[in-house]
Image (tube, helix red, strand yellow):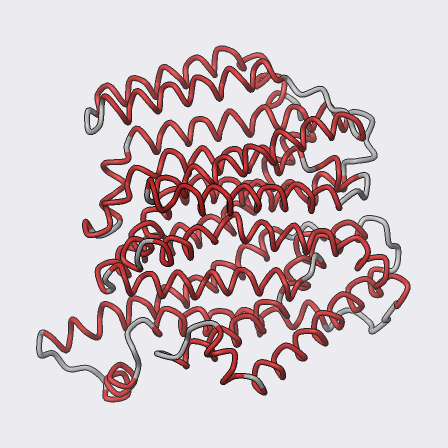
Length: 484
């Protein structure tokens, strides 16, 4: 099997593990936006913003460091146990501090109206952080099927609880039908929004339980010297992760501050329509990160990386054009009360495409152990995000936040390419990439501005773009898939 074919196969499996659960969760947005008004959906958004930020802090770059050293360390027991028990120790400290200072933290993060949310947040963070190392082990040891099974189990629990308490129980009670007493008791004693978070808590707990068997196989061999190396490698990734969280989520908090909670909720819900591009990037990263490290010593590594970026842009451009062309069908996944922010979708899609290209280019600083550059790029992106939002959000509204995200990721992408040429030059085909990006932006703009809801024209544009790409790439595709 060719290297690229194996890469595509693993990416598809990891993609299913990451994408399918999130696609299913995306369909839950329909339920959430039907049940919650925009201002309440903003509270849901804020919850997951804090979850994302603390997740970065609690893992402090250890996941990427794990991948970096897994292919190098002969003593796998030492690596696994050192990473796991370090994470377990710091997570336990976090749990204790959260319990001791709960009143102050509830006040600080504005959970006064619903303190239970804070407790659920801490629980989810603890469970997901402890599960990080065993999940990374499954990826690093090339067990994508098991990884996918566990992720799908997690989402099945989440979906079940959401449907049960946000849809089925209230419908049954409203229709006068019989409902088990314990379900009625739970439903009446719990704020409706909390069921969303409780579902995540239950899914995380069950998933961690299923991961335990993968950890007990390893002997306890804590290696302090190895830990120091992992921390040195990972701390710039921690800073970069914080900056990324700012790039990805600060806009929503600022919208709530500068405009109002209703606009924040509408923006956050419509933002999720760009999920398919985000999921594509996530699926790619899950397959690519271990692949890049494992393939780094091959003679043709740089040539392979260049080809991967080329095909990443091709598929990303097709996703971009497809979503924009059919946005007026996709919008029905959310309640019409949220459509006021629909104009941000093309901009956010392009922002995510830039981010995906950046992740491809980031291979140079990960392989050369210059992870501090990832930190620098992310900090610059965060500064761009903050400045554009603070200056233009009060003037132009939520569209300014979308452009802030796109500009931030565009800057990170550009800087990574030019600085990477110095330390780890890869001969990317910039001409092809530029043409594909340019045509996708042009076609999307024409479709969104002039042919909204004209699906004949939109479909024709999509097929024309796909035909051009196929014609340009057909010989390379034959070489890839004819190899055994």
